[in-house]
Amino acid sequence: MSCTLGNSYIIKAGDTLFIIAQQQLGDGNRWREILKPDGTPFTDADTSNLQVGQEICIPNGSVTPPPPPPTGNGNGFASIVSRQTFEAIFPNRNGFYSYDGLVTATQKYPSFCNEGSDEQCRREAAAFLANVAQETGFLQYIDELNTAVWGNYCDPTTYPCVQGKTYHGRGPIQLSWNYNYATCGAALGIDLLNNPDLVSTDSAISFMTALWFWMTSCHDAIRNSGFGMTIFIINGGIECGVNASPEGRQEAQNRINFYLDFCQRLGVSPGENLSC
Picture 1 (tube, one colour):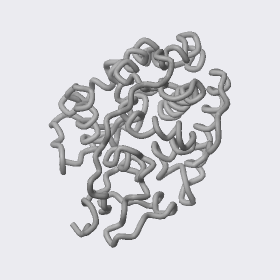
Picture 2 (cartoon, one colour):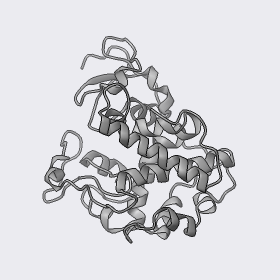
Picture 3 (cartoon, one colour):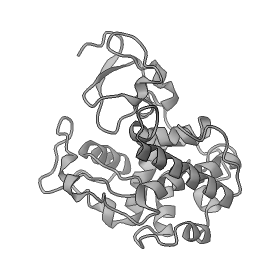
């Protein structure tokens, strides 16, 4: 390890500087404080070229603060998105993805769609649903479609992979990798490392995993930086920047189109910074 300023961190699959800053520094918008081992900062162009196994340096003295209390109207997601609206947005969804399961999951995260102005809360609901729609084919898919790679999501560096279990993408935002199952499970109080199938068999738990990811990364981004940052966080390496493929750019545009539609349904303007 060669960090002289701060603590060493090794990039894992799915990491972005925003996510790392959110988890390590308590605020994804502090990603510019993260340095290369030689002490130089990352540029905007660098953010699209992170490599698994790459070393970065996290500033010393970083303590993740406790989440702030909700500042919205106290009702959150269910007061913004009714059952009727949810079912209209996802008319062909898999029955596994129930409105009741989602509302139950939101009770685990009371600040979801319940922090800031009513406009911010409605945008967050639209942004979450837009990204979920892209990740799951409008809530049709529970498990990652490419079964050939299901066994590839194991990195035993920090958490052992349980024999006979796979850590492929599952759920509304496709939770993947053993270390994410372990970390998410610890946050939820559920042993997902040993029981990853719960994400594809229990609707509320499945939505909880999506909200765990969202609340540790996208929750602040949609309120402070705009919808485009949520795309960057979720799949920026493929869909954003100069290195994005035509297919990746189309996927990003899909997310934007869904977001615009859902904002209209929820009676809110989409705000600025829609693309990544």
